[in-house]
Length: 164
Image (cartoon, rainbow, N blue to C red):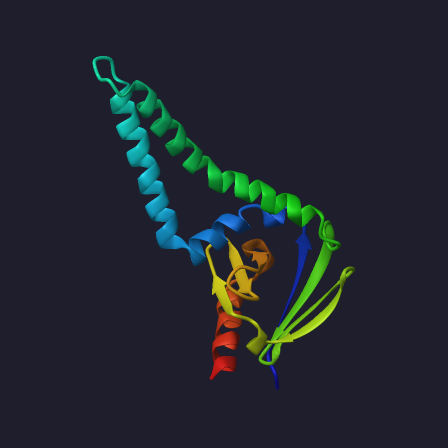
């Protein structure tokens, strides 16, 4: 008998908040760390150049500004991502997910889909929820609160066994 896991999730702002930062950390971890370190260096060096007695005041201010904007960029991208979600036809509705060894069935007011595991790029369980990648950049997010204990790992195993 085929094992099935059924999840019903509300697709709205609170359930999707933070999914973009989890996606960035999952896909681009080293770039996020490197960018953060570069921002810290720019702010520290710029602060040093602004000090009285040094001649790099304008350049120091520029470095502080660039480093600060580098830290703000992920927040702005997350805001734009969440704004795009509000335009989705399924926004503010419930979506039903049915996971099985064959794949994933999704049903809701915006339509239905039956997708085999081979069509998904990756399934990544995180502390806050489950990322299901359609390709390297597009993903579905289901928050941790919608799962019972151990279900995310079972779904991850379903995807792994389907690849074999």
